[in-house]
Amino acid sequence: MNINRTYIEDYGLIKSAYNHYVHYVMTEWYKKETKEEGKNAKDDQKKLKNARFKHGVANDYPRRYLDILADIDAHSDDEWQPNLGFYVGKTLKYRSKKANEFIVCVDEEMLKSDQIEGKCTQHCHRHQPKTPIMSSLACPPKNFPLDFFSPAYFNDIPASKKTIITNTQQVVFLPKPKLSFRPVSQEDEKLSDKKFTNKYWESATVDYDLSHEIGRSDNSSEDSDDEGDKSYCGESIDLEGFTSGEEDEGEDECIEEGKHEDHDDDMSDIMMGQQAKDDARAARWDASQIAGPSKWDDWQ
Image (cartoon, rainbow, N blue to C red; front, side, top):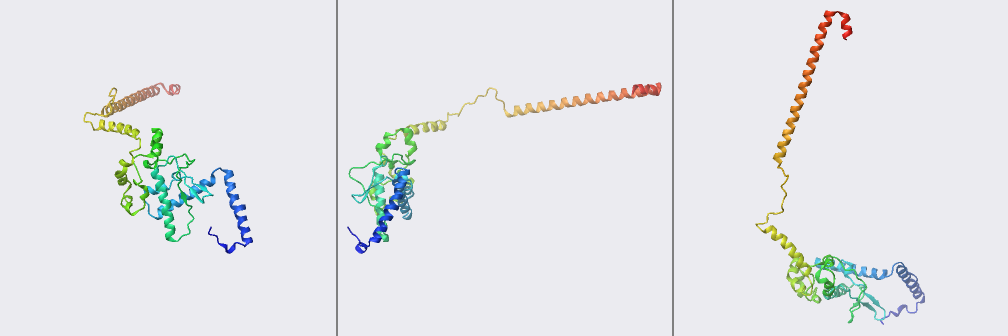
């Protein structure tokens, strides 16, 4: 072991380091674990995800790569092996071999970048065991490219779930992901997402069962065929009881005119009645003048 022996007999410093590690670091670790089992592993996974994503942004990774690195469910919960001195990479049951190789390449690039820049790297070394150790994580990311998922996992889930977790119209990994970030792959990695998918979709999806997509495409094609057919007249309409706008408008006009005529008749009747009353009143006035004031008083 490469040990700095300068302070090997400085018992005061050793005691302080021991107290800090045992009574603070491990105590905080223990408190987190008692509140939520696996909390420390989740925090480590989140830190690793953030480190990978920041590295990708700093090095201008394609957007399709950054979308993978930005989702925490795309990263495994690697486990520390004290006897080996490094992390053992666990295998997510839903992550494909291509995705695993891609993540390993990202970690290698992070280590190279730190060495070139002369940084004292704190990234833990991760090794993939020959016999895969399955991760306990079971919740896959949503709407991820098809080749991120293992063909065995994808083919085994119901069709209704396939449409939720996968974007079957996109692939993101090179045929040999171990060549990612190499000069030989730069031309392909600079392609837009659409051009990259058009180039590699057919070869990348050979092992995937996409029968549910065929059914969906048949339904959509039937609809488009009906609309494109010259004999297709669209949806039928029940014309019974249907009247045109002009007819309705004419009826409204007749109704309005009738209303005006009735109104005029009513006004005429009122005026004639008032005239008759006035004439009768005048006749009584004349009669009162002939009969004398007493009669007028009685009439009034």
